[in-house]
Image 1: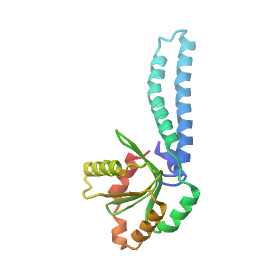
Image 2: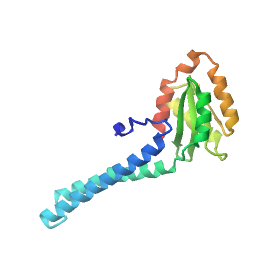
Image 3: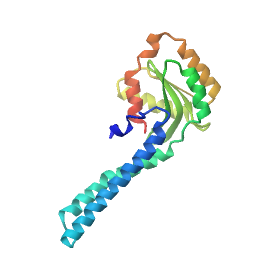
Image 4: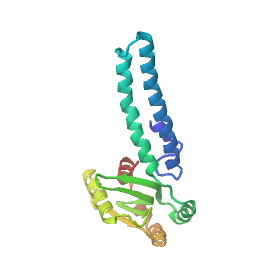
Length: 192
């Protein structure tokens, strides 16, 4: 279903809203298909003891998975547009990603924006109650499992400090900013 998100890929500012809409549409279609198959089987045989009932029940499994995806999509709060404009002024050539929602077994983490460069993730938390220590441990563990050693994670809650850090990163050599492939893939795989 990645083709549904090609217009607004993960990390773009528009992705959060686009994902909510697409997930809701897909969920409705899946439930309608399962319901339609059940009704067709019921009408054609006069009983719910038929093969279409089994197919309809099995069709509820991916539909139910989409319900979970919709619920998680609704939890993502978009970054304020004024903040987005400020961030865009400071991002430069860096690979920035907006509205990233990380999930772990214990906590969920919402970042308004993050930048990946080299083996480093620098982000801006969506609220003051962000648990930086838990997020750092979570990302360090995930990166170790993926074979990415010495991953550095820093999350700011202060916008001005984050913007200053973006300016500092932009002053680094291009070599330091370009090697982010494995870490970028990891972030894309563990976020909603």
